[in-house]
Amino acid sequence: MISGNKKAFENLYKQYFQVLISYGFRITQNENLIEDAIQEVFISLWNNKSQLSEVSEVKFYLFRSLKNRIVRQLERDIFDKSEDIDTYLDFLISISDEQKKIDLEQSDAELDTLQKAIAHLPLRQQEVINLKYYHDFTLDEIAKLMDVNKQSVSNLLFRSYATLRSILKSWTISLFFFKYFILSE
Picture 1 (cartoon, rainbow, N blue to C red):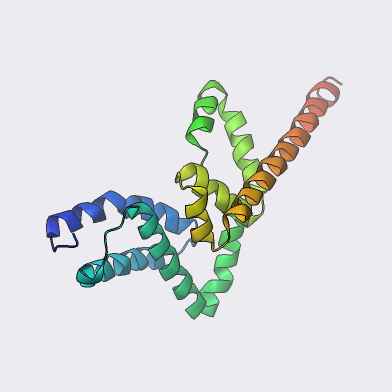
Picture 2 (picture 1 turned 120 degrees about the vertical axis):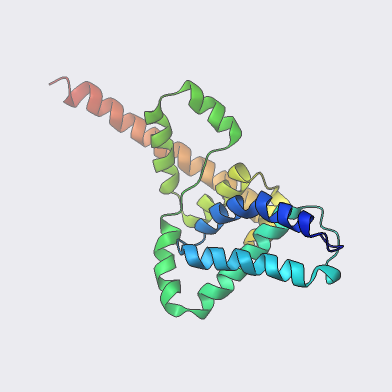
């Protein structure tokens, strides 16, 4: 693509468009803004291809470029920015591959419970879990994406796990109480 190969550029676009859309929806629910930002990222890549250097982590580069464009656009438009705060609060994540294997052995109700518990996490904790397990980024890459240091990412992950354990434990106790004491009456 850097050398001007249009087919390579087209393949790059096709390969990453859907995952970029998905990631964009984790930042804002404004589909037009997301699609425009993706188009701008790729137009900028093509227009500046002669100035680009080799990139070893293409996915990370595209995610970072998309996030920067969306954030800049949201900061320009105060009205959209205030609406997108609510979107951040409704931030949903997917579960890691390891968790998916566990979920295959468990019922859909248990998966739903876990997703609801994750939705109760603070926004930054949801974001770090999403980047780590859904998009398979390293701690260093997550730190760069979130503009924090690597230790902060580790701390966020640790707090996320602790909070999730606490939420799930309290829900399990409540369910046990409801099931055995309320329903048995």
